[in-house]
Image (tube, rainbow, N blue to C red; front, side):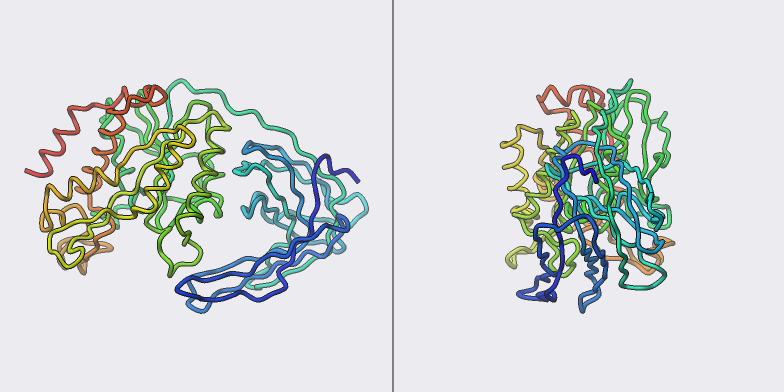
Length: 425
C-alpha cells in the first residue's frame, strides 16, 4: 500500500454535543488518535440542534493529511469496500467528490479528483454517502493507494478579473426580490463601458445567485450568497469553487461580518478570533495562487438610536473590522473601509433619509417578495446598493496600492458623483 507522504489518523466523535451555553451552541469535539492502518469502518451521522438552525455532519474513520500549502492538488486514490457502496470524499470538511462508486473486488476502485486547498495541511476523508433520508451511514473501506500531484495555476488572462466573496449585502438577486439589491450586483456600473456589460452565470457554478459581469476591460464575478459568514462560505465549499475559476493576477474582494456575529445561527456564527482565522485562510489561499486579496469592512446596518439617542449612528461590527485591519497590516494586503464610508454617508443623510438606502416599503408598493411591505435595516434597496457600490468604487480608485492599478484605473470616477446626485436629489 502506498500513501506518498500522507499521514493517517483515526477520527471519532464519542461524546455528545455540549449544547447551548451563554447563547452559543457547542458541537461535538473530535477525538483524534494515531491510525492503526488504512482499513477502517467509516461512519457518518447527522445531528440537528434543538432550535433547528444548526445542522452538523460528523464523519468518523481514517483521515489522510498532507502538506497542501494552500494550493491546488490532483488526488489519485484506490479504494475497496467490503460491500459495494457509494462514497463521498471530503477535504478539510468540504465535499470534493460526491456519490462515487466503491467496488468490493480485490482491485478496488480508482478515484481521481481535484482539491482546492485553503489550508497549510489538508485532511482527506473517505466517507459513505447518505442513502435517501437516512441520517446515518457506515461502510467498511480500505484505502489501498493515495497520491497527490500539484496542479499549476492558470496564467493571467487578457483582462483583469475581480471575484466578490460575501453575503446578502453583496449578492445578486432575482427580479422577484426587487427592490432588494446587493452592491456587487451593480458594482460594474462604475467601470468603463457599463452599457456593454454581458451578464451570465459562470461555468461550473453550483448556485444560481452567482453572476458574472463581463465588460470590455474587466470581468466581475459576484459569488456572494445570502446567509453566509466567512466560516460557512468556506465550509460549504464556496471558496474552493471560487478558486476553481481563479487565475494569477485576479483580485478577490472579501467582505463578511453580518452573519459571523449571529449567535443564534450556529453554522454561521464565528466570534472575532475565529473569524480572523477564517479570513486568514482566504488571504493565504489567495496569495499562494498569486492573486491579490482585498479586505472590505462590512457595510453598516441602519443602527440609529444608539444609546437611546435618536438619529445617532454607530459603527456596525467594529470588532470584526478591527480584525481586518490587523490582517491587512500583518500580510500587507489592501483594505477598503467600506464600513466607515457607509457610516459617513448615513450620518450625512440622517435617520429618515437613510430609509431609502435599506429595505423599507409600504404594502402594495412593490410586487413579489415584498408586496406586503418590509422594514429591514440590514439589507439594501436598489438605491442603497448603487450608493454603496459607488463608495466601494471610490475607495478602489483612491487607493495608491499598485496591485490594484489594473482594476482601479478602470473606475469612472465622475460617474460616482453623477449617480449619487441623481439618487439623492
